[in-house]
Amino acid sequence: MKGEGYKTAANDERTYFTFTSIGTKGTIPKVVEYMRFDHKIWNLAFGDANELDFDDAVVSDNRDARKVIQTIVNTVYAFFEKHPGQEIYIEPVDDRRKKLYNFIFSHRREEIITNFHVEGMLEGKRELYSSENFCDAFFVSQKERTFED
Image (cartoon, rainbow, N blue to C red; front, top):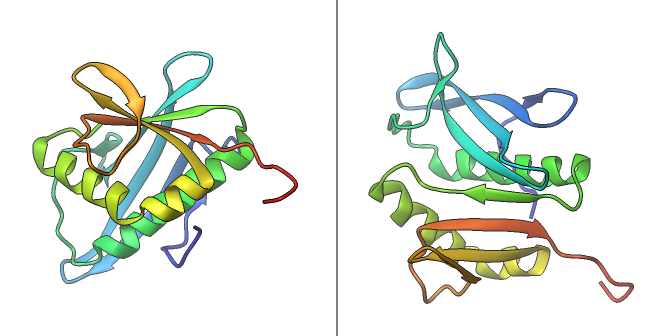
């Protein structure tokens, strides 16, 4: 669900978002980018902005993780508004983030399965997401709405 995150700036295609994290270590510019894999799948990448682009391996630990995560979630909704019928691929860059992403998907399970179709990557195979599984990556697409929704 869209919630209170940081204000973002986005390109017209809603594939590149910037925002500023504000916390105990000051202000840290952040980037969320959706990069096309093929005609239907987009990779979600996120990190701290730097002079070249952004670093998705850095741990800034600005003590505002919930607000940063909500901001990223808000970009997912914005991305799908512009790109219906597409799919987002989310693969953690390290084991620490894999634990975090699995925690987020498990913790926000109800919201996620209400609004999205999610598959997890387990041992190289895509399976319908279950919070009981520890996934290596995630595939997220919008659920088609019915008149009852």
